[in-house]
Length: 128
Image 1 (cartoon, one colour):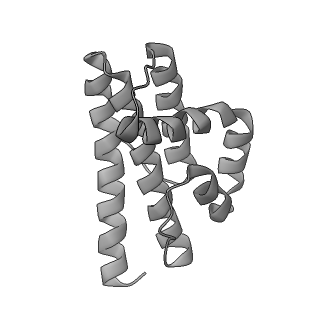
Image 2 (cartoon, rainbow, N blue to C red):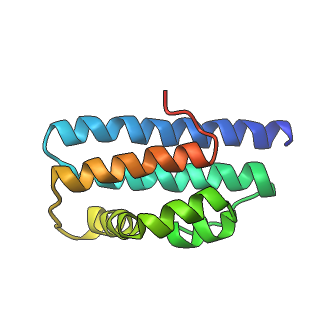
């Protein structure tokens, strides 16, 4: 990976981790809609960083399902096969957080947060 790509990778990972961390503040304030929006952004940026690292570039798309398919990562595929509904919740939160009023609860947030942690593990990103 070239210097510019390495810097972009680091920036994407840093932002992904930031969105992940900020989501807990949102959840503690009862703003599960924004917390889930931030978790979706965390996954989206983490996947794009992974694609940059493994393929040298990433597509300018926003669908988590499409990004996961492009990754061709067995760990991710197994995770998504088991937790497909979380991807739906996160994609819904991404759209809803920008355009609609949609309410979520602590359980949806907690399950989604654990899912994001597993995605990070599958693609080699530490959230600490």
